[in-house]
Image (tube, rainbow, N blue to C red; front, side, top):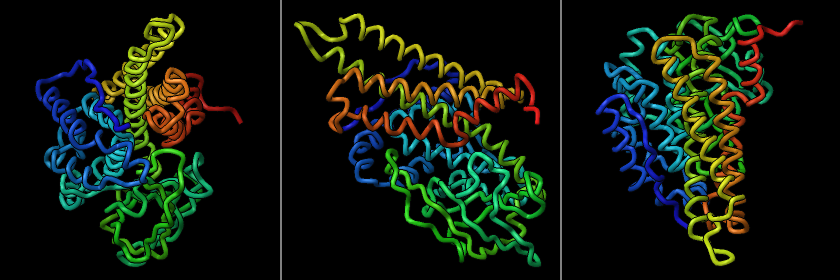
Length: 390
């Protein structure tokens, strides 16, 4: 069954411009994204043409400065765009979030010269980015990464392997974290690496249970030479840059999760009001009505939580704790709501004839990416109870 366009959510948006922006996004999802989502995901097709369209429509640089091709949109608005895209097709919503994550280091820590040279193409020139932090042996413990960058005159030579890279092998640029000094967090530096750099090769994409249209692959850096002009920030500043990016990126994941949950709820309500048993719609039965009510309540709570964190960010206030809370709650909500949606549809929910089984498979990865939900709990606990004693 082809996916329907997401039902419009009644959004409280800050400006007329933002209302027009959401209307544009809904038009694109209805015409270009939703109709082919189920078929393309089943085939494992990555919709590069959609990202080209989103870039041309100004949707790949929304939270960044218009002086460099961005959209000057607050996170409060940008995240609601991600939710709309994630509800239509998670491969697209999460892909936009990852692209924004890949642009964060240069936009926030690059020199004016670097920003003028690279950002316009990254934000609105049709390029697609990826973010390279995780490695085969360093996932949650990202500060133990082993990929090395060694200075050689005016260049750096990068050697090592990155893992679990969304858009790995198809991105036009990679924000790469590599070790340039001592062990631990202080010895890590950020680099902007072209996707076609000699010595950079991608392994075959991982075979995943969900998000089959979004390629995830290891990247091998075999003496990749990068000019010092592509080093972002100071030597040894890379881990702080990475953490800053992840705080914002976690909000992107939270918004996408609520999008998936909303899509699952919409499908469950559509089915429950149309399916008849014992002479009446199954939506009349109290047990199912209460289930739908709980699903809707969790979604509203998650949306409120990620928007509250976004407003802190927009105001220039600390939001790391709230970002972790939003990522934790919203992705757990997506897992619960999609599981419940499958239950509402019964046997039909377990088949590929309806999209809820895909939503359930896709929701699982959101509890893992950009810091597992166990890591989010550690982050939250450190904020409220201080660091762990050793």
